Image 1 (cartoon, rainbow, N blue to C red):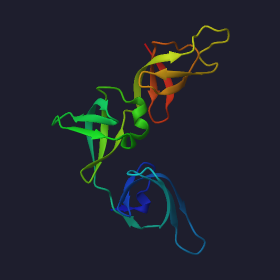
Image 2 (tube, one colour; image 1 turned 60 degrees about the horizontal axis):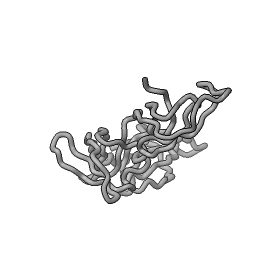
Image 3 (cartoon, rainbow, N blue to C red; image 1 turned 45 degrees about the vertical axis):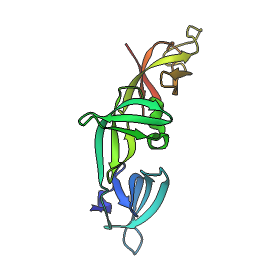
Image 4 (spheres, rainbow, N blue to C red; image 1 turned 90 degrees about the vertical axis):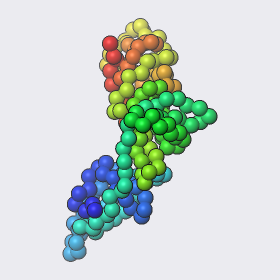
Length: 187
């Protein structure tokens, strides 16, 4: 059981038989009444955002979530195939289950698959991934500096991120998978 006093960003809980993750919350003390907690939650199954108010001290169920490290193998017919590194069992996931993670998914990458009641729910990639720039405007113009500005670059996975002017095709860069932002060039 999870109490409202345990709420924090990223906490996973079960609400109306749906696994949810807390995006934001706020404790509010009412004038004469008891305190309440306003929360904004994201459904882990559908991705929809729910806003809910709870009384302070109210208890909610903890979801039956399980995390498994799995290796991404390949994509075929719109399905993404992952392999359990311990049992070598392969599972297909849909594009919807991957969400934004598919932009940075590379063959042989290890990801964490979140299971809810035995069924795969979503994919969590490593926070940072290293990818090769396959297409970008050439560098070498007057005013190109490391901190001056940025330009779009297409990565080997097809994702497009903004990079500094000094990045060229063929460079390997580190990208934050949570925000889709360029971090640094990898040597």
